[in-house]
Image (tube, rainbow, N blue to C red):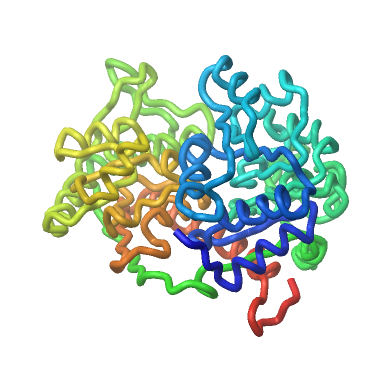
Length: 451
């Protein structure tokens, strides 16, 4: 296929060429992969600035997305790709193959840094936000070799999925601490102050006055943001909430666990050792079942399954994609419906051919870089997630450019439970995310060109 870039795609490509270190906060569906690949071939074959490129990506994206883009576009077909995936032996063989671009999944970054002599002069971090934790091994490993490569591009649509604290490690990989400081402690001290705390134990931080604007200003020269609605004709989207109610007896069990963090059963108790564990257990109960201390599944109610049955029946054979939260969710759904789980490249192909009527998937399994819009336009969230990033990315598998139908996203919510809080939390986080994106949004083709 002949590649005729949109104006915004040329703008983003030129931004990469002009900035040895940069972050592209591109909204879902804007073509970040083809943009980056186009910049790479110019740097490889026109400017001769780089000779060996490493792409770090989520596993499924590393397996399929980058190579498929090269196969899709005429101007990219001559690029030689080596996928550094699989067993250690397979990874070592892949590193020894002659190629232009080497692609590795992010889980193996630590291994690569430890056992391979670093000879990459350009690094692309696809889904930069997966390096948001400064304590993670992948961040520490890549930071160690950061002085050894002269060009780096960070790609993401959700740079601050939880708070602006998430930005420090991501920007540090780009500029080595030039803008937000070399240490997370200094960044936290300069721009944040303690929020929730218990004496000397600080549980969360909040931005200082005017800190948000100051952070955006610091990043404006190396980060560019684009929202899909500014440049694409996105399909219409309808968000729908389906509320279900537990019986008095079922709600009493829920409230007891919420209050006492324990539900005693003869065969095994349901208990939560801390607030995070309690949140997890309450989400499970809202979905209808929960694991006990022995990992046995305790059935609580079937209200969400009944609502799901109504939605499937109303679809009249139209394909639906159901996102589940826990294995027992998937298993209970599979007991009531004939479903196919989307896990492999072959599953994706069958779905996109319209041959799957009811598909199930965990949002983390399809969260990045996969195009599923050809197979259907209806999403059902059976179990919600606290992760704004997973939520947005999962929805974007169907709600993206190329979707021909209105995308309907159903959320099955159990009234009076943590489900309601999750939805509110996702909305609150989206406000902060939107502020960050808007602050560094590119203005192309007559728009204000300031970041």
